[in-house]
Length: 353
Image 1: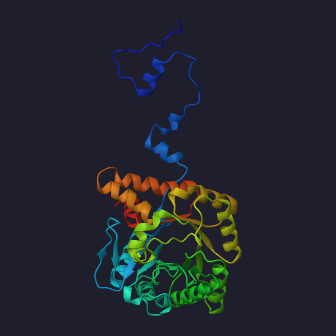
Image 2: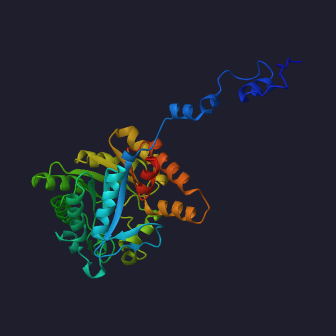
Image 3: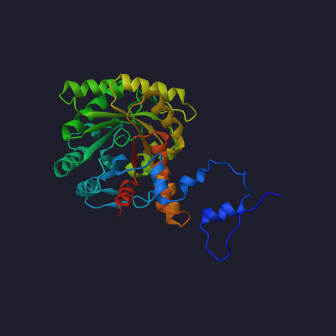
């Protein structure tokens, strides 16, 4: 029978000593993974991944009205006025969030089949970008390039014979991107998934003196069911109806195809690439980072946000903890940054607020 270590019953034993007293000698390994988990300082010392404020991009919805309007399917998120977007950008600056991303909710009377409002130099996006750039120049501004908020059919491109055409759409996207750059946008972010649009937009920007404007390409954007609340927010869902975007967005079952898309966009001049949605596609994020080693971003899309925020609102989960754990998952997968509607809340927590 193995000898048992003696314990003084009159003396308080430290937890480690108590464990030692309880085990037979020679029956446990020398390597104990829990040693480095015992104390907070040790856990922090060996932590492999962390989220910082510098990782965050804050998407903002804007509309051409004077008041903020809550979005029912996205708890605590509203469509903002231009002034409201400026105030949000000021908050971003105070919190240290590097970039805000502008998404428009276009008034129904301004939508048409050709998405003409996208190329209006005084549209809601351009007005908002000018206002933010003037008031808060230290914050980067990112703009979505796609036609779906502006079209009466809800698609990201022009439709000819019941099909979203590629090259004709790209020509319009170039005009849209140029107007956004002229308004003061720092990062052009094409989300349309038309073939060749990165190279065409890069040539257009460079040819007009905007060679310093960056392109963050939605390179692996999937035809996902997680976009529903976003479409409510920008008003494209009503117009899209039961149609889908499978002829230009990616099949959720494909991974090799995502690598081809990334490679093409990088060859055409993309400075940064994005995977969208985020958490359901962390395997894609990891593969992109491993294979290309370029600045890689992920979008925690509206459906992901609403699931977590809605569950927290009902008391089903600890909202702050699941928020931070979800953001950490992006970093662990290899993302350099995250577009998230949680950005302001997460930044406040990270700064000890």
